Amino acid sequence: RRLAWDLSLFTTHEFGFVKLPEQYCTGSSIMPNKNNPDTVELLRAVHAVVQGAQTELASILSLPSGYQRDLQATKPPLMRAFKKGLAALALLPDLLASFEWQAERMLESISPEMLATDRALDMAREGIPFRTAYKTAATQNQKLSAEEIAQSLVNRVSPGGCGQLETELL
Image (cartoon, rainbow, N blue to C red; front, side, top):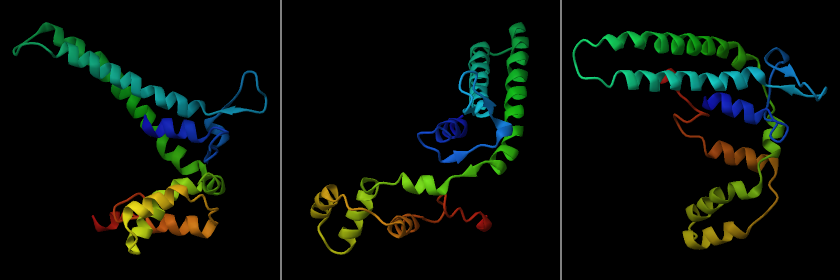
């Protein structure tokens, strides 16, 4: 659900971080220039089916121990959840392999205040008391160059983080 939410949000004009291939979109019923990320939106809805089945099962299974005839009612929600969930998961490999990151747009969205904490911590590492560094960083609205943004992002990657998974160590 979170992946579908993020893709749905990040494909909007306001963000524009991700471009989905046409095969995962449909045209708008009223706006001829618009493509809707329908596949992602429907993927997002699958979570509700699975969560609904989970709630249904929890309600049925809240019984005393022993044989209960009403346990036969657990099969439909279980089958429904697996059918929908597995179908949704089957879409992901091609979807993830085929969308395009809009790196330039993502970099454009980074503003100086987003890196204020980084600047405060850098100043503290240089020996400036953190309280002073904090206040200084709060008032600085310097224009950042692409190189400064890139370097700040590189400096914040840590082992095991999304930019440095280190899965080869497993």
